[in-house]
Image 1: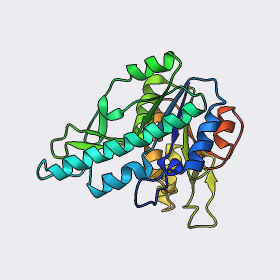
Image 2: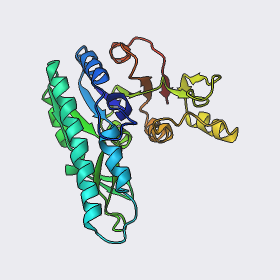
Image 3: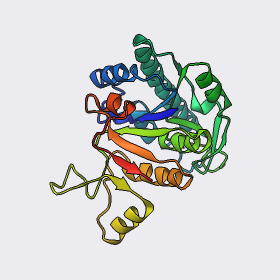
Image 4: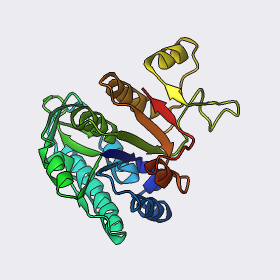
Length: 260
């Protein structure tokens, strides 16, 4: 079984002022997924479909009152993220992939932005029946009454499912080849790290040479290092490079970072 996460920046226009699909990338990614016969769970980021509203309405921030504006912010974020999920599933189905969209906010709960309730039995049932469950980053209920709701990232979903379902592979498709010694978009001498461990990150911090943080990379690293502690390794690849997803599913070597 494989858990594959596709970053929202790979399937949407991340700097768009309104939710916008990157149709070329989405079509290519879905076409490459048709070549695997393994059980697959797909998780995608919300990209411009979720981040625009989440930022505008400060979803997950401390609230003074349970205002209509705050409620509308959560509702708009959920609705927009679900629209993206529908688009992704429809495109997968065009390639004869039996994708089933599953809304995280319907059955996952947070407390202080961390998962505390997650009944993954429905995911396992769909998987065992031959479907491809497709989850995504979402705005969900939070049991901290100061915030009431918070953002659930795709990386949090990966960590939880990785710990509980013990997949053979956990793959994260980002917009870079992996983790670098520096931000590769700013430094020509940035080097790709083929393997990252907890010690690697500590060493980078101690020398003030932090790993690339584009696309929320620090958050990904932290979640994946926690997953590695449970014995599940993961791999970050560039999902925007044609052929990368198909190649990694076929166990071919590509530029990437393994976190263990």
